[in-house]
Image 1 (tube, rainbow, N blue to C red):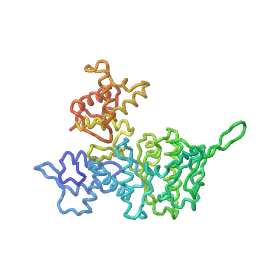
Image 2: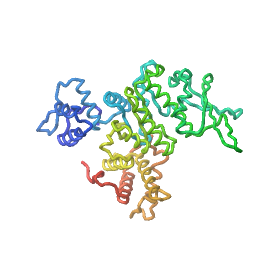
Image 3: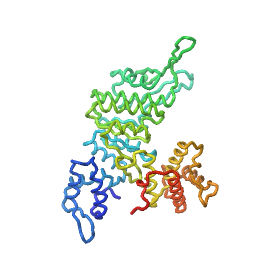
Image 4: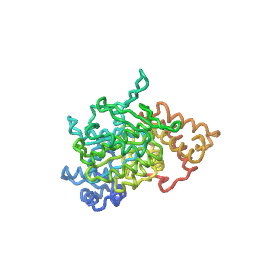
Length: 433
């Protein structure tokens, strides 16, 4: 579906989809339903609702926004989705996004940041945390002597504004002490960070300098650095008074569940202490999303998916979508299987769900959850298909439409799996128009 406002909408679709979605409690008292009904007139001979002539560009833009918000209009590009988020943040304080890996979360955060930037970097308006933030920190492992390992800071980045003047060490420690047992020091002249840890040995405490911390510990440090900067922006410190938006993408990629809960809860408390800065948070981590969902209960909450290889991104309000992401993904697979719009990356998603099911039920291999069928007596053919089509060149990042034979195998494996492991049938209707 194009991202333009449709000139004609079939009667049943208009009433049962558009108007029905506008009944959601989130849209009460916003005038959305009245605007849509007044902008379309019914044409009896074609049984269509027709967009009225002469509507102003401002009203057309508002109709476009409304139809996107209810999920009736999709997004052709990440940039369109970013523009939508910026407009939505005029009326919402937080946006939460859950999306499967490879959907485009990092690209979305970058596109959102770029929309707030003109040719001059000084006009940026977004403080962001994503994979590029982590790249601002690089290791110098002292390969010659293997003794003084330090984390270098990119001094050209605005992220480090006022590093020395604002006493960042003490600000970072307030956050880091919650999660880690190592210490650090910043060399403001050489723009690097060295790490240390105290260990107990022979009834004495010894401090080990210039240690190489683990990848998880490094992520925690960078995250705490970001939190310290975010707090400065929230407190309207001059060095960060340019921040209008905070965009956070997957801050816990290397953390266990305990730290995921702690990070989410701590972040929510920090964000709720301020009123001016608007925030977008995206993640593929179900537990992290769950905590943020409950902490920021007035946030706009979306499930983001990509419909095809050409783009077309879809957002669905999680109030109208099964909350648990594996159920949402199954629903997505069910819908594309019914429609025939199956791409090879759908095997990646199916395998991920089957693997989690096998682990939950105590099986060593995901193949244990692929039921044997009459054309697969030993249960190996379907397992091999899932293996083959979820690896190699059949990747999530280079989607290709499945061959017809593979589509039929996919539907059979999916349907038998869902028969064997029962889900709420109301979420998966047998027939679709």
